[in-house]
Each structure stands twice: as C-alpha cells, then as structure tokens.
Length: 468
Length: 144
Image 1 (tube, rainbow over the protein chains, first blue to last red):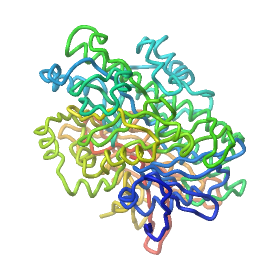
Image 2 (image 1 turned 30 degrees about the horizontal axis):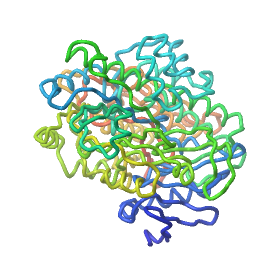
Image 3 (image 1 turned 90 degrees about the vertical axis):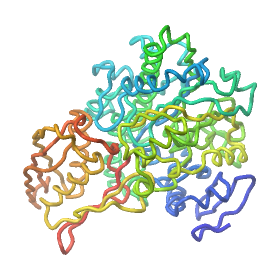
Image 4 (image 1 turned 60 degrees about the horizontal axis):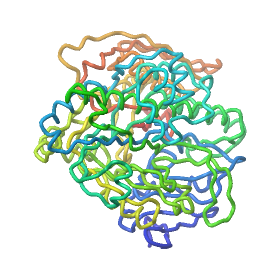
C-alpha cells in the first residue's frame, strides 16, 4: 500500500515494512490504523532509521502519532558501541501504567463512587503547578531515585512488601546515580511526589467489561465481569522532564562539538560509552525510579482513600498490584536481533511503547470514554519488536481541534449520564482528551493481537476518572 | 494576536510568536505560556512580582532558558507567570554571554487560576528564534 507517497509492503497480519536506504521500518498495524497516522510519523521514523548506531529495524506501533524527534509509538535499539537518544525516550521518562485489582463489584461501589472519586482527587493532586501531599527531603529523594520502590516500602512505609514483585524491574533500574541529576531537577522532584500531572494522565476506576482469557485473568485475580479495578497513568513529573531537558541541551552541544550530525534537534544522540551518554543514562534511571515510586506513592494514597471512604483496611478490598509497566524508557536488554540468530546486549529505546516479554502483563490505556486493556506479552514480540508492543489508543486529533468540537462541561455532563463520573482540574483539558480525539483502542489491541506482540486478557470500562 | 497556535502539532502544543522588538518577544512569550496553562484567573487572584535574570550565548539559548525558568517557577514555587511588569534585554555581541535578560514577572498562585493544561518541557523539535525584517519570530513546541 502507499501512504503519503511511502510504499509499505505487507509482511503478515497487521505487519507492514517500509525499506529505507539503511534499514527496515516495521509498522505493526492494520492498513486502517496506518492510514490514520499523520505524515510526520513516516518522516520521523525515517529520521530514526537513518540515525547513527542502530541495530536491527525501527518498529512503529499501531497507536503511533508524530512526536518531537521520534514518533510516539516507536521502538529501536542500539548496541553497546552505539548511541543513546534522550529525545527518543521522551521528556516524561518512565511514563507508564499501573493496574490494581479489587474484590468489589460495580454494585458494591456504586453508592460510594462519587465520594471515592472526590477523595482520590483530594489525595492525589492533579493539574497545573500542584504539589504533592507526601513530603520528602533531598536525602530521601536521592534514596528513592537510586533505590526505587523497595526503599519507599521498607523505609517510608508507603506500600506492601509484595508490591515490588509486580513492577517492571521490581521498581528499581540500575545504575542510577543521583550525582548526575541537576539541582533544578531535584527542586522540581521534591514537591511532586504522589501527583498525577496533566494532559492525558489519569487515575481511573474501571469495571471489568470482558474477559478474553479466563485462566490468565484468574492468575491476576480478575474473576468476573463487573469487578472493580483501578488504573493509573503518569510518569516522573518535573524531575524527569528537567533531566531530559538538561541532557538534551548538553547532547546538542557535545554532538556539535564532535561534528555528529542529526536530522532533528530533538534527536541529538551521543555514543553510549561517552561521558555525557553515561551520565544521561544514570540520571535517566533516577527519573525512571522516581516514576515507579510516584506511582507507588499514588497507590498508597489510593489505598488510604478506600479506607477513608469505605471504612476498614485497604486489604479488605484486595487492592493488590497486578502490574506496573513503563512505556517511555531506555534499557539495556539481551535480544535476538529481529531476522537474525545473534543474541546481543542492546540499549532499547521505547517511546510510547510497552515492554511485552513472554508471560509479562501489558497495560494499554484508552481514552476516558473507550476503556482499557490488560494483555500478556509474547515470545513473538521478542523476535519481532525487541519485546515491545503498543501503549495506548494514540491521538489522531490535535488538542486545539478537539476543543473546537466539544465543550468540556457538555462532555462532563454527557459522560456522567453514561455512568462515568469525572473530577477534573480543567474542563478545557477535559475537552482536549475527548474520546474522539483518539484512535479506537480496541482496533489498536486487535492489531497487536494479530501481529502477536501481545494477547488480550481483559477489557475494562471506566466508571470514575480523575484527570489533570 | 501576538502569537498563534501551530495547527499540525498532534499531541502537544506549538506556538509561533512574532514581535517587533526583543522586549515584546519576551512579553509575548509570557502571555503565550500563560494562555496554555490557564483559561483565566479567579477574581481573588493577587499578583506577585518575581525578578528573573538570565544570560545566554545566543538568542535561541536565551529564549529556551527563559521558558525553562517559567516552568521551574511553576513547579517549585507554584507561581504561574502571567505578564511582564518590566523587561530589559542587553545585547553585547563581543561578550561570551551575548544576551542578558532582566525581567520582572507578574505571577499568580497556581490555585488561583482556572487551569487548562500543564507544560512539561520545551522541546527542541522545530524550536527556532530568528531575527526577521519586521523584528523577531519564535517557534516553540511544548511537551504536554
């Protein structure tokens, strides 16, 4: 098929390939989803493919849309002698998803729903310039950034010991070195623990709408339609944003100094083994750990909110962690390069893409109207996409366009009538996040299912939402 | 209008600012920043002054650092910059720091705005600040 003048050859179910001068770009999407991608996705994917130091193909996920530098929904790898690209990991380092399960059914929660949403809104600050309710000092921030979730649970008491078992990398990526983080990033991090942020970040109360794999669902304590689960989407807040900003500027300076060329300023890259490259990785891992502890701190606030509104102990409502997984991250992993028999240690860049290793839960969040999915990773993903899959519904309409089409108050009212109670910091922001601004999440999941990057376990629909 | 939103930015927000002087450029930068973050301020909002000084080797670097500072103030002090009370830009092409900015910001507490959407960072994607025949033109894409 031809899209914007680019020729894509069909390779399999929801798999197309675009061949550039230097390497292949795999699109794991249906024809319909590829045609919904904006033109810049193709240009940015080609820019990536022609960047220095890559190994294997560039992979584009079905929810891809243009970003800055690299498309949101892109995956690629560089070998140990290759490059690292901060812009292809993104500002919101370790933006990710977390899913908690309850033993409540929708009818059990119905009388408390609005009160619970309001309580969560109070306990987890959202929106512009909001500070978190859990205060930490600089030493604690250092320990959290370097040691991750286990420090938060063991030393600050914010969580259950078993939580770490259900987090990617057990909530701690090494080597994280706080001395590589600027004072500006530290100042931003100190005030923002247990905050959600804004834009497409959310905390959602959902009900199980459909179960596709009963055996696997039970393994994650999902037993019936109508069961209540809690989903969370947020990242490393200002701490991670500042780390990315600081290093982007430094990368550009160093790249120019060493006459390293790049096609987009946001795609400035440096050798992994360079001093600046190494420092970025150590700082980026600090941000990744901060994102894990931020979602852990929010989980603590969720459990407290349940106790406050419904009474008793959080354990009475189960509230166990199903999984926590990143979708903006760079990591060292061993991979058999796609279409090759060689296993290599590579540095995988995932920007708007979720790790999807065999038997690992994958969480894909849709818009506040359309619902979300729990899936399981596959061995095919390891062979095809550096063990990666999609991350969400993917935007198809700009914020300005969306706001022109609907008024936030009307949307709020319409959703309330449909049984979705929303507490938002901004009606304007709510309009920007309307369901029609996104692709159909079920079509995205169908594409990754067809491509065998991950398989659906259960589908959830929102009944309550907290939004920045 | 001193700034316009760029239409082909899908998930984030981009602005194009045209100004006839450096002073107006920085004034419009603050106004565009405020209009992304806030729909309006509440009636009770009190204005707080904040002085900021920034040095840079180029105009692009100065604008980048200035936005970074506005974001930093928002996140660490909980203050949203609304407008400029005073602005001085000193240009010395022979100095290492060719541009020196000295501004007094009019800020409002974050709890006193009706918020729109938060800005995470200024991206370098499409980022440019150029002198034109009529003054200055800046293109900025924000990560939202």
